Image (cartoon, rainbow over all chains, first blue to last red; front, side):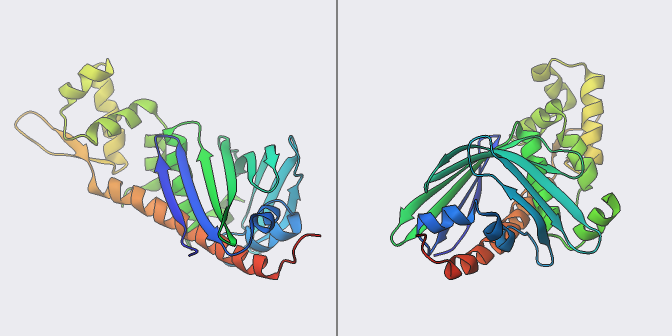
Length: 154
Length: 107
């Protein structure tokens, strides 16, 4: 039931869906509350998020800083654009590696699914090349040797 | 496996992305690429050289022509990008399942 889907749409979109056992209220909160985000939005094992700023109102700031404790570090900044409790979050975000990546515009929807939730995240990148690069950096992030690369960059 | 850094720079150029999109439809010679792109032959050849260096296209010799096509590894590479991003996301959402399991309903 928890199977993730990851697909591309057109030239600029990436769509992710995932089902959760918990109701939309809880999944929505877990996407906005800094203390909860610090527990799960971490990527590969071994990484932590010592700084988590999430101001859930339109125009509110987002700042996530990750570290692997071995000198590897990067961060993401962004802003919330629209919030509809407990069904929809719209935000923009960019990674700093350390140069900022082009803005990723993200709409996350939470819809009731039985007693659980279906989450649908739709990312919109400025162009096809940016999307290809983002998908590629997802790969690097998942790879062991990306730690060495991050070490060199920091 | 294509060189990732080279592949990134190759993909950063809109003309090269358009050339890849054209090659996704099938093999083409330089002359066949010159026409739709409204560029000179040397300009197209320079772009093809970058794409070839990045491992995204392969060329064969046919008389005096060197037709090019998408490298199978380029297609495989794009699939692999998706698979690795999927794994990173799965790790996050598996953690989120545990977080949700410990959350109390909001007052």
